[in-house]
Length: 308
Image (cartoon, rainbow, N blue to C red; front, side, top):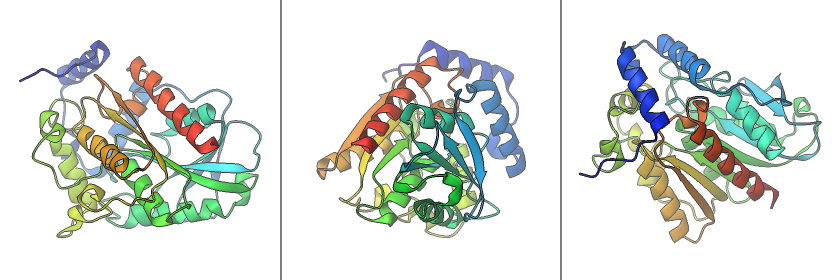
């Protein structure tokens, strides 16, 4: 069997985590999982981009944070949905990433602090993100200038949520979407990257199973169209899409599959893969310089799509 390509920076981080040992994230109570994830960001991520200001918005369906790369002017806004399997993650874990998106695109970004499982199972996160999209399109005063359009972005489970919002808003509702290693099939595929990278790369089958069980506890929920869109027809009316996958990610093939199906349907899709890197690269850029470079390229492409 061919050995996967692993960047030296990835190998060093994986070796350090393995040497440290400790309790598996999936075996922790949800509160401890969230605290550990926040600590990982402090250890592995870069600081916020200079020159970007932010403020927490009021009046929305859930907590929201707005990012401004400069003085606000009328234009489109990017709605960002964080990853974490619908169980962990918040405004703080993805704060540097959101400042990067604002700085790199020159556009306002609104991050969604949707409700988390197991306290709030499906469809809480999906409902919150769709409500947040409609709230932002109404040009709330906190955004300081009219909103003329909406783009969506997210990583992992947040990529699932971004795709859901774009699909639910219908043709023309969303201008573009950026999906970073999106989770698109929650039924634990028994082949491909889900098996090849199911252990030893931080995000593993055990952790994915824990996330799915917490957010999708009901019979059949994991195979539903919102949780597992790859198991259902993909709309031909999706906006222009940028997909970034990680080469050592159990979810890698899901992003590849979505890109392939969109291209087959004649939809515009821009696909990139971070070879030798793992799931979570968007919040581990201090540890992975290559991740910072490719994420910036993906965001630049996304910004160009929105402007065009």
